[in-house]
Amino acid sequence: MASTNAADGSFPSPYEIETPPGCEGWEEMYPYHGLFDERRRDRDENRFWFWNSMHFPEPMPAFDVICIDSPYQAIGEWQNRVFAVPPAMGIDWRVINGYIYITGNPVTDPAKIAERAEFFQQRAGYYFQNWTELYGKWRAKMEALIRQLDELHVPDLPEYELDDVAFGDEHNTSFYEVLDAYTRVLRMGDLMWQHHFEFLLLGYGAYSTFADLCKAQLPDIPDQHIAQMVAGIDVLVFRADVELRRLARLAIETGADPAFTQGRTPDEIDAELAQSDAGRSWLEELERTKDPWFNMATGDGLYHFYRSWYDDPSIPYASLIGYVQALKAGEQIERPTEDIRRERERLADEYAALLDEDSRKSFDELLALSRTVFPYVEEHKFYCDYWFLTRWWNKVREFGALLARHGFLEDGEDIFQLSRYEVAAALDELTLTWATGGKAVGPQHWPPIARRRKEILAKLADWTPPPAVGVVPEAVTDPALNMLWGVTTERVREWARQQDGGRTLTGAAASPGTVEGVARVVRGVEQIGEVREGEILVCGATSPAWAPIFTKIKAAVTDVGGVMSHAAIVCREYGLPAVVGTGRGTSTIKTGQTISVDGTAGRVDILDGR
Image 1 (cartoon, rainbow, N blue to C red):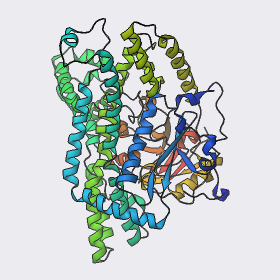
Image 2: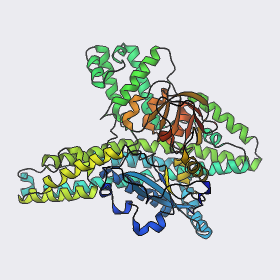
Image 3: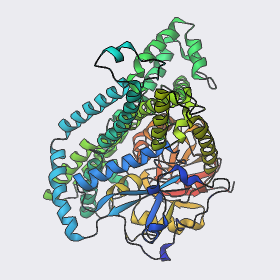
Image 4: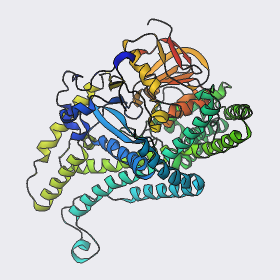
């Protein structure tokens, strides 16, 4: 991305941002290639980098960096080396004070773009023509990988090996099994990310092609209307919320509803339900529902502390309490799916009627393709980011428990304060000294490192990252940056102009409607439970895992996101106004302020001075 001058505003240099007091040495948590290194300052300082608060809203623990490297390896492979998306190669990442910044690597040579277009048309065309069959195979691959992960055994280190190791020829020694299991867990994660991005870029590509046609043939069409024409489709990731609403109705029908009162914990609710036949019957139905629908994460999945609903049932139970109370009050808890579908068909018919016969044929074909591929844009998250990753983090925890049992860590959770390479080194020493009977230094080496890093992360969490650093680009052409993150040429320049603050924010008009209400700023998943009925959610980004709270809120405002971001999609499906990609909503708006959200115009106004 070539840069422009500061006439349209500017961002700070990534090399001039100071380290918060008490956080000195934070760089040691991250690989050398993720730092703004002086050896490539001439290049990196003159590029545009934005904070990826959509996926990484909190400072990144050392182990969790694997969920930066591996996904960007995968997205680069599919985008650049397999499908050869014409205008974009892959994504580079860097870290500032623990927060992740990314930028796209564009293709600017017209001859190279034309060369890549031939690959893309042939390979993407094959997927589009065989989408249903290939997607079915993809789901089978993901389910098989999840089974393999569940079946992987992390062995302990016994005083003496079993007789089978000595007398048999089919059993390996424990040192080998531990090291092999750790390597296999890492590679399974890489394989998941390979699967994750196989179809995703094509989902964006189909929608982008449809949007380009609409804009070429219908110059006045709003982006929002294009998005609305593919809304209202059943998506697997919303099924978990459907099941919660069903369970809420069942609780009322069976008389188990008195247990669901505000302020009670899941354990307290379960304890009361266990005392009656109706309650026990409801709990049995809950158990049948959990697999697979409780394989949701409490956040976006990319941090180790985003546990599944199995591990942390606070979100589904809070939703159940809300749904039970709403139903008893005679309120509507269903998504307005039929209204959304009627509106999408009305828009499609009206716009198609404005086109000539040839253009209408292309319009109908591309709209049908977009609706066919759209579900994957959200469904992949259920299989990959939730079902697989929550179990994958738990498998890593088994290695943490092993290290803790031998004194290498004070707590098994501290494994996430070490990088994946440091964990490998710790396991190497553990298995070596266990095998030889030697004296390990790990119990003195690793615990103070973990303690210090937890302190640094806690302090970095209080620092507010700038939305972007570097230079303002002349153009942002990467379709993934445009569609998912909402990082467009216009949006970036708007961010730059807004650096001095103000009481009006602008962003992408993601879901129509205008409302006023009280803001609730949510900076992390642990704050989701603070959201109250009728508030306006203000956050870095949302994920489908937050779907149950969308029946509570009146609207949503995000820092990052485009028309195909999760926040935009979910708000359209729930009929809520949304403005995404404001750049600075969470740093400008305060909880308790009254704000106005115009999801049709993409505008947010702060109405009081609190």
